[in-house]
Amino acid sequence: MKTLLLDLDGTMYRGNRMMDGGKELMDYLHFHQLPYLFFTNNSKRTRKQNMDHMLEVGYENIKETDFFTSAMAAASYAKMHYQERNAFYIGEDGLKEALIEHGFCLCDDHADIVFIGLDQHADYEKYSKAVNFLKQGARLIGTNHDRVLAQANGFSLGNGSVVAMMEYATGQKSPMIGKPYAPILEEALHYLHINKSECLLVGDNLETDVLLGVQNGVETAFVIGGVHKETDIARLGIYPDHIYQNLSELIVEF
Ligand SMILES: [Mg+2]
Image (tube, rainbow, N blue to C red; front, side, top):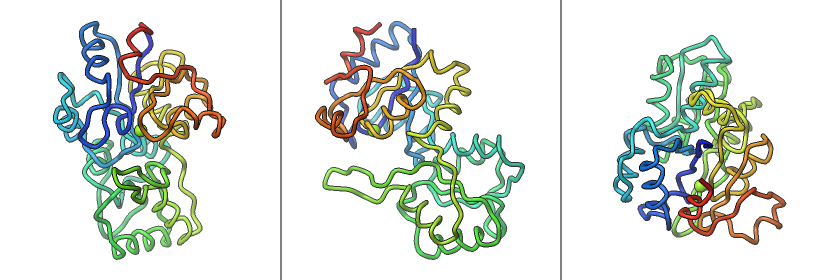
């Protein structure tokens, strides 16, 4: 039985609304004790905030350990690849939690690494502070490279656009960590102690969820109803292994 790596926004819920078939799928997984992990580029929420949001949406029996975010992937990646531990970050509670859990010292006056995660309250002063640390030699690490985020009434600026701004300002490149790039997958597989042949990537976004699988030899399931439509498959040339209209259709796979 493969472990389901389930995207959150646009797959399990949209804002505060549960996606069709979500409850059936989760009840089935819980009843049969089948393995899964919520796997998201969104670095904003802590594990507990993610759990609380899922419960608020209407899911049941969700645990804090059910989540793996781009913030956790970025912290784990940096811990593995670099010696330095003094970090300055632009981000919200989820990134802060991940950095502390991975042993980073959060500082305001000296930084070896600047982490950039989605922060809807960051301002010019904070961005400029990050630029100064980077100009003084700190490494730049963005949690993910999403250009924009789909909202109910349009789009908002994605974290990747802020990372690109930092790269432009400093001439430094951030490693690519979030979906569709391999590091977030490698970190999640390491967290689960499984290999890539043992998981199925499930998501609504062809350019992140599905492309990650296509480029890394992982089986993919595209669920219609979020960012992309079925007609986008041929337009983008990104072909999932399975296409579902509704999350409950995944149940027949087991
Ligand atoms: Mg999504």
